[in-house]
Image (cartoon, rainbow, N blue to C red; front, top):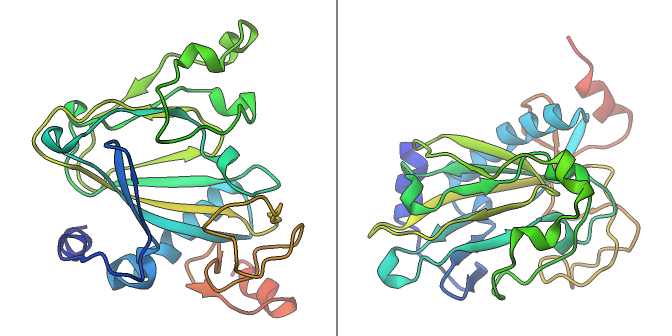
Length: 244
């Protein structure tokens, strides 16, 4: 973790990286796994864990993102309630995010707040991450209340990791400190996931075929065993996964 943090400390955003700024809430730098060796070496290992959690033989990397909530004087505004999956062109469930604290994160810095059980409600609609705050109650019906718990947030030590489903409602409180809140997110989907063709700038222009798998170097396959990136397909690939 210290080496990864040092690599991110020295990271200079270049023209080859995509950085999003959602008003004053969050700065997102994407696809560090291609440029930061410390990140690239961890992505297959985390992918093996994702495959096990999904009970899948193979998963596909979606992307990895550095997530910085600015210090109070530079914004640090709350992140609104949302689900991740409705904003992506995926045809099925199984989207997982590993959210890794790069530094110690206190409750005053705005760690993620989750609504337990809300993943069971299915897709509740896409939201604009830079839009107006949406009350949690607007997502839920009276019947939904039986399936969800109370919102929960936890302080994290550097290296602590949370994993959440793409349909889990989550948000983050404001960063009320003078230190930025930094995390590294790594996201995966089942290898069987198909591209719906819906517009999304991370996938537009890559030559992906609607209702076909995400066959592209940007979305490498990984196995439930930590063998690194899976490049071959067919019987050879299946044989690699056979337990010893």
